[in-house]
Length: 360
Image (cartoon, rainbow, N blue to C red; front, side, top):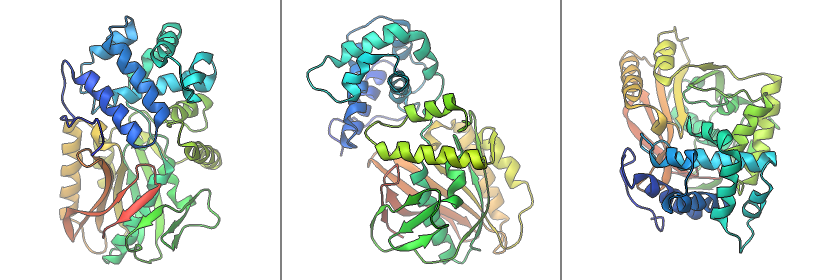
């Protein structure tokens, strides 16, 4: 259990839930070693609690949605981090350099007063937490699917792709407990800390990748790339290097990414012919909580309907890496048709690919 974390319904709304969401985010950041991000969120929480005036803080207090499900604290924290990355608010350096003995709340309050108009749009959409390290879980799950007898040629469909960094997973190299997958040397190399048995050894091929997002990010646009950087917790410096590598890859060949909600995308793609000897996979990571309930239902219904018609020559699979907010773990689960229509948990994992505890 994370110290200081309150177990609240992720869809809860109303008085007191906003401040509780900020408290929970502080606790989660501290437990994850993100002390600087915890300081920023705690400062925002203090400003909310003490009644600091202003349009931004009033909009946060009166949040109409569910602040936990909407990741409200990380929306505004991303905006504050962007000010620091652009160098337009020098006072923030004291926090981002993790200096002691400074008034975090007053530093953040000054930044808000000076840049409120710039910060307000950060409330309009959820964080874009695109992270290449999550692709380790997708690859491990595909190895497991190949072990179950599904064709090891994968047609990948990703929902909530953000900038499409994980759509380029076939360009990366993976060392998964000694099991080598992907090109050498690869645009990026991943060797997550591994617990448990290694994944199955198979030769797999990524035939195609295509993804969607309601607000896709163009990695080749410096302003949009800066937005992605702002959502990276500054403590996790390795992730900035990965993002730069992804930007370079996108400049060579952009990922196949369309602007569409997940339900429309999956319904459209599942209606297309599937080549024999290919496994069609829907995959997603740390996005399900942001998808409206009606779209979740449509995606599930579309997958289960298509799954009922799947054959051994044209199977369908669903790979998910999502947070278990009760256990504070991210779980990799797999469903496939014909075969295992109920979710099978194959691993728990660090949300940014640092470690995988294999259970399959």
